[in-house]
Length: 272
Ligand code: AMP
Ligand code: FE
Ligand code: FE
Ligand code: ZN
Image (cartoon, rainbow, N blue to C red):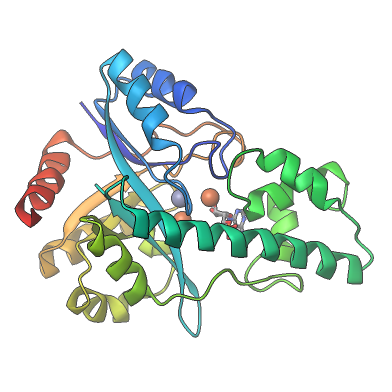
């Protein structure tokens, strides 16, 4: 049965609860999912609980953001130790900077005459960690934008109201994940134009490439599968579902085989 190893919960910027995610994954006939929230692992224990109830295997994960001079790079960490205090401390700091960053985006939008409420952003994020999808949703509510894509013309990387997150390098993201027994995997490399740096990341401890992703056309998936094979890296994949945060529920739209999941598990066991 297939596995979707890139799913967000409402503990970050998805609209779905762990229970809804597990139910949807079961409806789609999946064997395994991974929970990979941005900068938080708070959704994992609830996901594990529902996974056990429904007989679905749940891999604990996280998605960190890192910056290079030119772009933002996302690093997935699989099998991270949920009980690590040092990881929790890092994530808490990252979430605090996200909070301030959203405030800055509100200020920058106001400078352009586009007023939105920071309280509404906080309300939408709820217990979750604040992200640009929350800002985009409030921009749509305030009719500053008609769609998420339009909102990202302001807050996207090249937009006038873009504010970077915390500053860690891809190397530091790899180290944070490795330090808690996790496997670092470069997320959606097809969206990055970053191939020339992959050998460097491997020397720093990269374990895999997310070859299969909903933003990768088939040719791109093929390319990263080959690249992973060439470098002896693990291959992962998933939908990157954000619930309705990205318009529709995508759980199961990109999957990998159980065999690939087994390789990932073996690599993790080999580290211990
Ligand atoms: P953040 O972690 O707060 O920077 O927000 C990142 C989220 O915004 C991720 O879920 C991305 O997939 C999404 N995102 C980034 N760029 C765009 C874009 N141009 N259009 C729509 N969503 C985007
Ligand atoms: Fe996200
Ligand atoms: Fe990402
Ligand atoms: Zn993601």
